[in-house]
Length: 201
Image (cartoon, rainbow, N blue to C red; front, side):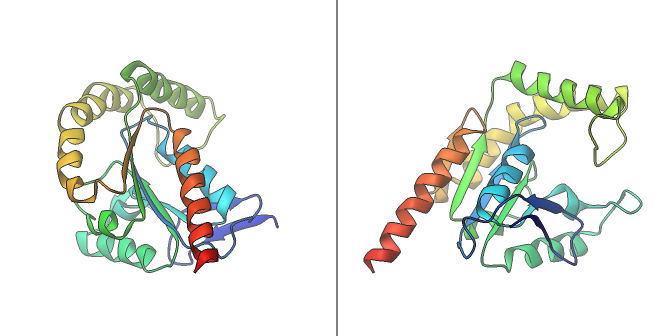
């Protein structure tokens, strides 16, 4: 089956190439800094298992005019996404929406090497500026500087310790990876184990 999954009240669309996991029930939360590869791998999972995925950025921002949603609207969009039996939610945000950690079956924190992460940010910037890739926002050199020197450094210095503390109670389902593709392997093993358990029952 070829097509896409779209929540009628969400603007995030994930294209689905095939649906071998149709009917699968799994909730995955992916968190990482800019250029960690979280969006790429979330969409890859969506393609593999036929599960809708959402960017937390699209809960925060109204993409029609790039204005910030109110906290009430933001939280309502997140709650709507989490109301489904299966979902993939990815994003850098952790100071709100902590309910997604509780509801997730698997929580992934991506911690790539700093030079790899920054190189991805620069690559995405160049591709977007050249029109080779579509972005959610207008790229500028000022914005690139902010992502590299403020957001990513701040995330590594302050965000990661805070996320580790927030998810400590969920350490049984929290997995820290360096490469985003490791997530595919972990989810595959989880799905296989879930299938075996359900068959046994």
